[in-house]
Image (tube, rainbow, N blue to C red; front, side, top):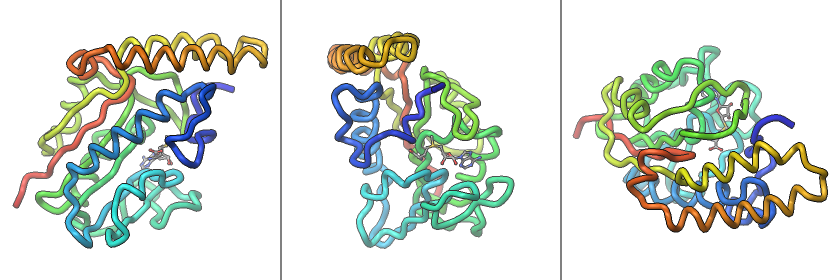
Length: 234
Ligand SMILES: C[S@@+](CC[C@H](N)C(=O)[O-])C[C@H]1O[C@@H](n2cnc3c(N)ncnc32)[C@H](O)[C@@H]1O
């Protein structure tokens, strides 16, 4: 098995990865940080949210039942409530949404600049984008894994269509990421019974490492970057 495939085998309840799951620290940390960031979207009561590249729609629960949540994906995803056009643009008029969620999608998009222009187009003035994508992470095609970002590169590509970044954070620091990469490099080469033992040890270590690593260092080098960006307007 190549790559992380973490969407395919992550547990339904994202906070409950088994302690020996090979991406336990990632699975436990990422949704919790995204939930915190999602509060900065400031979706008004009855607001419209687009999940642009939704897969199995893991974050619907961040928004109240009154929010109109549109889960969009490429053709063939049974969880999607809206199928994207053949060029992956969204079949809606300009300024249709109060917020866009884009979680672990940008690295899978062949033309990130075009995707971000589309995020900008579908947001109303003053609307906000929550975007997370990988800094340093194993190759994981879904359907293709194209890109990795640095903190500066991600700022640049998000600001290009006109967004203002209002919050930016590193999720999982360099130390924990290094431990994860060591585990990823050896995991599939080990005898099957040894794999969960290795994962249990290294995932525990990664969680400890992340507790001691400072926030400033994480903002520069991280496994995942999360940001909230605003479309200028009222
Ligand atoms: C790794 S999954 C992430 C899914 C989900 N957002 C999450 O956080 O778990 C990547 C998703 O991006 C979608 N995707 C790939 N290319 C895309 C594109 N050009 N535009 C929109 N979505 C795309 C895939 O179909 C898939 O659902």
